[in-house]
Length: 264
Image (cartoon, rainbow, N blue to C red):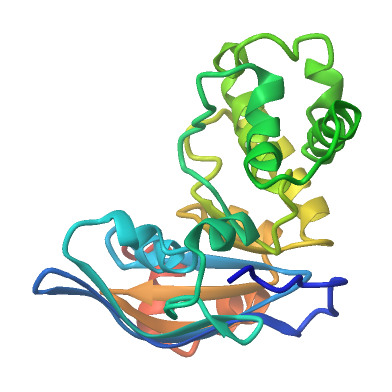
């Protein structure tokens, strides 16, 4: 069953996705315990915590990437505009178009810059002519702040770009299918500080149209770019709230210790 359109972006605070009581198991090992949170339009939600605490596991639940992990089992409920994403009628391909993913390491397809961005619109039939596809590719590259750098290199391999450019290409590829949510798993960890600054500026622009969930180990980055922050520890979410409150007055002692650098 096709997913319903999200329509116009809502105001800040309107939940777009809702997770309730999410547990994740890898075989007999429980990786997440009872995670409940909302994902809202118009904001960046940062997921922070020590390595192995469940941040990326939770992120992958949101577009069912854990489906491809042998032995993984997800319990609880995750809804996208009221629709259970683990329900039997959910089309996973369409779900992943609406909930796009940008990985930790830039991973352009072994195709041209143009074909990387055009891939999703082609398989989903989003355009009816080459002119429409050309316009969509250009718009997506502009929205990813990359057009001016690649407009004369559209037929070159995406892998020929610099690391920061490749990551922006992956963002352009994700937004070309008009998602509602962008998931970003450490999107700046494999690129240099200048490219990181450009990605952070881009995220601030993109949040005006998308809900963004970002996993980051960089506390300064979380403080700069997110409106809300969730702290994970040993598979549990111990803290969630406005970023400035979590960073200055966290209720959880473990969150305070992690944010202050006493461990992690």
